[in-house]
Image (cartoon, rainbow, N blue to C red; front, side, top):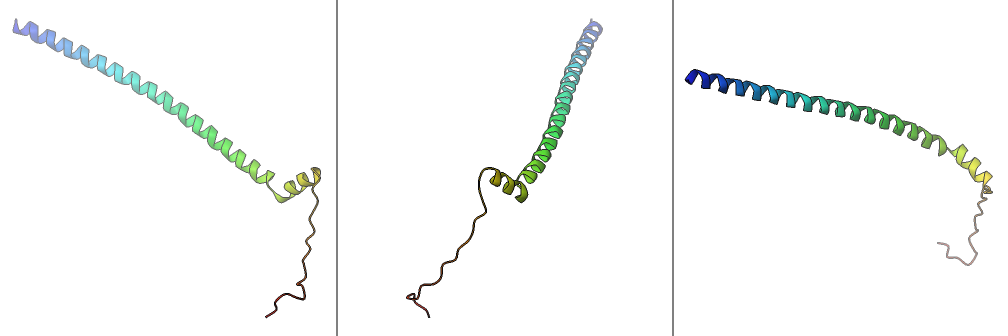
Length: 91
């Protein structure tokens, strides 16, 4: 009788441990796939950020900005300096 209880109890423990192992393995596999997907997305975002940085640098260059300003009707400004009036305080 004690031997039968021991066998049944051992079988239940083995089945429980095996089921637990399957559940843990399944979760790890799912997490691995999600991690791989996140790594791919991170790589894509880093590449896109680099491309956008290059595009910003080229679009903000002085030549591009001055050409766009000329296309929109802006012209180069002339600077006029005012002379100091004769009645101003001179140390």
